[in-house]
Length: 90
Image (cartoon, rainbow, N blue to C red; front, side, top):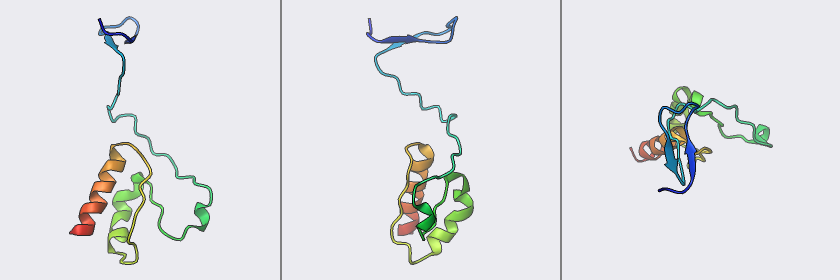
C-alpha cells in the first residue's frame, strides 16, 4: 500500500493514493499582471505571456536586445524560452 494522502471529490468516483502528486492539467494558467517593484524604471520591454504573440516580433527584430529573462514556471514560460532560443538561432 502506498503511504500518503487519499484524494478525490466527495463522494470520490476515483481515488488516488500517492505520496506526491503533480497536477499539470494546464487549465489553471491565469493571466496575471506583472507587478515588479522598480519596473517603471526598466527601459526594456516587459511582456506578459498573454501579450506575447502580439509583442514577440518587436523583441526578435530589436538587435539591441541580447538577453531575455522569463519569469514563470508553467508551460507558457517554457514555450517562450524555447521560442526565444530558436528565434535567436534562426
